[in-house]
Each structure stands twice: as structure tokens, then as C-alpha cells.
Image 1 (cartoon, one colour):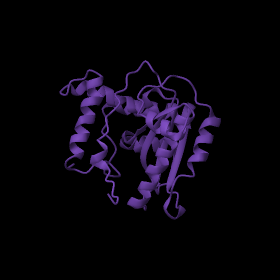
Image 2 (cartoon, one colour):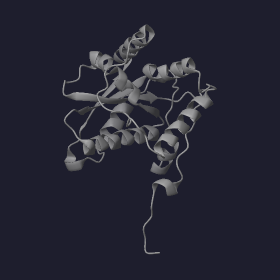
Image 3 (cartoon, helix red, strand yellow):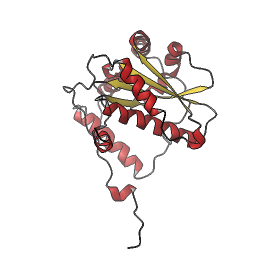
Image 4 (cartoon, one colour):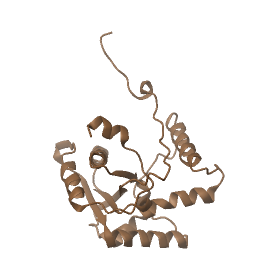
Length: 222
């Protein structure tokens, strides 16, 4: 699979089959991903790749908290600005309409939306997950390094015939994840990522992208 096909076929998959991902594949992907760009070679990412009983325990604890109606953990970073100006708010709203519309969930059906969101903490059935941390002392440029690292991981997974779903939702249960993984105190959980083989019987809405002219400006001599 060439890089263009990996980019084109990458999507947020929210349904995986119960088929283990070979450890050798995960090790190959993560080893190659260490070549991701990093300013001054800081490499600010700290990734935990979790399978088997540890992942089952994380899912179990998160599901128990959800069933009990416990509040989310205190946020450790702002996932979105309090006010999203145009065109970002419109894009976010369009995503919600596409995502829930494809599931047949009405805009005012909050219970059904809650059920759909709860799949995050089951990793949508994925047998493997990545939890990505960053040092609390890092700044915006290092956060961008982490984003490039995660994108590299996702594209390498596609090259291996796997799919993924990056999930900031896991940051809402960062204490639960930490109970199992025991990361150093100086690390902050940015996101999780579900990893596995796609369940092709589960419908996924492929969200649209803005026209090229809205996000890219070509400057030349013409």
C-alpha cells in the first residue's frame, strides 16, 4: 500500500472484529513510528500499547464508572476552545450531524447519543489500544509533534491492513487508565487509540473535508 492509499483509506473506525493483532506487527509499527518528525529531536510522546488482560481491565473499570453515572475526571487540557468561531463550529456541527445521522439518531435523542459515545470506552471492540501521554511541561510545538507521531502510527497501521480510531474521549477517564498503566506523575494523557481489524458489517460515516480552497492557498508567480 503506497502512502497516498494509506492516507485515502485511513478513517475513524468504530467497529472492530475480535481478532488479535500480532505483537510483532504492533512492534514493527511502533518502531517505524519513532521516525516521526520532532523539533530538536525531543520526541515528546510516551505511548503505551495495551492488549489482553490489561486492556480488558481498563475497559471494565471505565464501563463500571459509566454504568454508575460517575462524572468524568477533571480535564487536564482544553479539548476545544470554549467558543469555536466560523468556520470551525460549522464543521464540528456538520460532523455531529453526519455521525449520528448515519446511525439513525435524531438530534434531540440524547440517550441514543450517549449510547453511541459510550462505545469509546469499549474501544469499539478493538483488541488493542494505544494510550498516548505527553509531559506536562511541554508546549504547543511539542503537542504538534505528538499529533504527527499519532498520524504516522495510523498510516503505518493502514500499511499493515489494520484500522484505528483516535479518541480524546479517553482523557475523560484518565484516572481509570492511570490505575492500570501507572504512568509517571509528570505525564498527561492526551488520547487513546483503538487498533484492530475493521468489522465491515458496522457502518461508518465518512466525514467530508472542506474544499481545498478553504484550507490551502497556493502562492506562485502566475
